[in-house]
Amino acid sequence: MYAAHFGLRELPFGITPDTSFFFGSPRSQEALNTLLVAARSGEGFIKITGEVGTGKTLLCRKFMATLGDDFVTAYIPNPLLEPRTLMLALADELGLVLEREVDQHQLLKSITHRLVALAGQDKRVLLCLDEAQAIPVESLEALRLLTNLETEKRKLLQIVLFGQPELNRKLALQSIRQLAQRITFHYHLGPLGRDDLDFYVAHRLRVAGYPGARLFSRRAIDRLYRASGGIPRLVNILAHKALMLCYGQGRQQVEAAHVNAAARDTIATQRSFWRWLVGAAMASTAAGIAWTFVR
Image 1 (cartoon, rainbow, N blue to C red):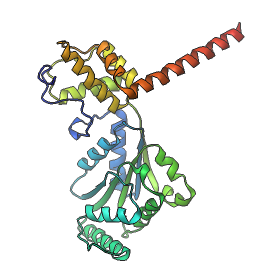
Image 2: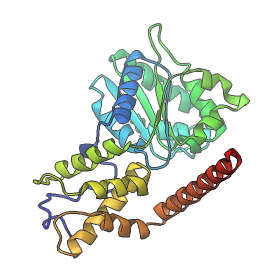
Image 3: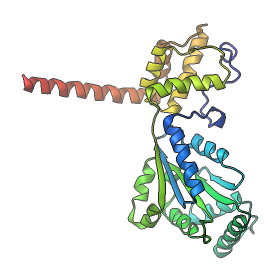
Image 4: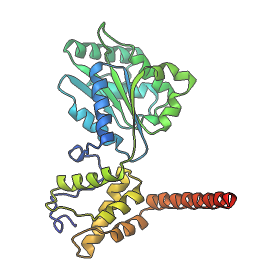
C-alpha cells in the first residue's frame, strides 16, 4: 500500500471510527462540549443529529472515552429492537446475568436494582444509542419510562440519541411528545467547511505520521471539498483513493486530477456532483430569465 511511499505509519483515511483521529473542528468540538455539559448536569435525554457520514459514531466514541471514572457507559450500536429486546440489551451492557426466560417485571426490577446500586457508588449511568432514527416508537416510549427512575438529586439513567435527521420527524409524533419534551440538550452535526476540511486532512495525515508539510495541493483540497460536500466519510473515501492514484504514478503530492479521478470512481459523489450540476444549471437558467425580464 502507499503508507511507506509517503512516510506514513498507518493509513490516514480509514472509515472505521477511530478516536485517535478525532478532529476537533468548531462543529465537532461544540457538539462534544454540549454532550459533556449535558452529561454532567444529569439531564435525562440528549440528542445529536447529523446527515449520513458526518461523524456521529466517532463523536459518540470520543464522548464515551472522554467521560471520567464516575460514569458507567452502555452502548447499543443498532437499536432496531422491540422494547423487551432493547431492555435485555441494556441489561447485558450493565453486566446483569439474567435467566433465559426472565419475565418483563423481573427484567425491569433487575435493571432498576443495578441502577440504584451504581448510584449508591456515586456512578452516573449513561446509555448511548447509535442510529437512533431506527428505534421503534414503542421502544422510545420504554426508554422514556426508564428515565423516570431517579433519586432526589438526579436521574438514575441518562440517554443520548445519535441519529440521522429522520429522528427529528419521529420525535415529532404526537404519541411520544412526552419524550421530546425531555430533550433539553441537542446539537446538529453539520459538514466541514472548506478551511476546516483542509485542517482535517492535515490532522489525519499528521496523526498517521506524515512528516512533510502539504501532501494535498490547495487545488486538490478545493476539489476534495467540492466533490465531498464536506462530509467526513466521503472525504476519507476520496482522499484514500486519491493517495492510491498518486502512489501509483510515483508522485509525491496529490493534485486535483487525482481527486477528480477518485470522484469519478465514487458513486455517492457522482450523484452529489450531478445534483450540484443540475442545481447550478437551474440557477443559471433562472438568472437568464430574470435578466430577460429586466431588459
